[in-house]
Length: 324
Image (cartoon, rainbow, N blue to C red; front, side, top):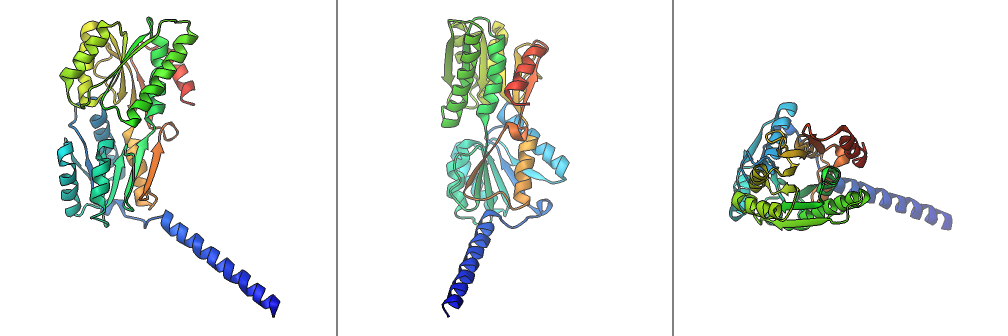
């Protein structure tokens, strides 16, 4: 009798264990969705033509539309004062997937999503995912800034480096700290003793005039290279550098293509691969709510672009630093 009870207990425990595993599996995988039958919209904080974040996103959207044979609608130039209004409009129009591209959307998405449980939201470069129908996918931008630092550290001649960025949020400060640390390491290895870093934030993604003034002040203080990550505002930095004969390292898009004499190299974000990664996980039920995921070099998101002035030796050093 005692043995029978023990056997029954073991069977019961095994059954409970299997139920727990099944429950975990359900939590970790959403239902599979038909991507071609899904209504998808992307919200962007700016217009195209910024040679930075918004251009990068638009290239990624076009790539996925062509490769996957789907339609992705796009709402451009969504201002912070209208984030929640636009999110509600899209949810009310029964979009299946709403992608908001930019860390600044994080709070509004998490607030809005709670009211629309049948819509799935994804914040690109988000920092939180509080709701069951919200995911955040964040590029490991610090990996890209380290690649930019390898270029900067090997082409610098005087050791005074300027950095113009958008907003001093946690992610931005981290990628700039990584950039600065790597550049310093390389310059010290090269024997430079006087190393100066100048850092400024525009607190705007669009104010080209302010960014230009910041760049001019840095150049006046001896900056020989500017590392620029401020979206449309960064165009002002490029103009200032062009006029003064100063070099620029571009970031997130490919301004080297339009300004190869000034923007001697760029680290481009391949958002075709990023959007394809997100949409594939959405279709397969692996893009899960209440989860923040990161992508970067391992997924092939960051691509260095060079002008003819960057030597094969420096290009090889970037490859080595990125683990290729």
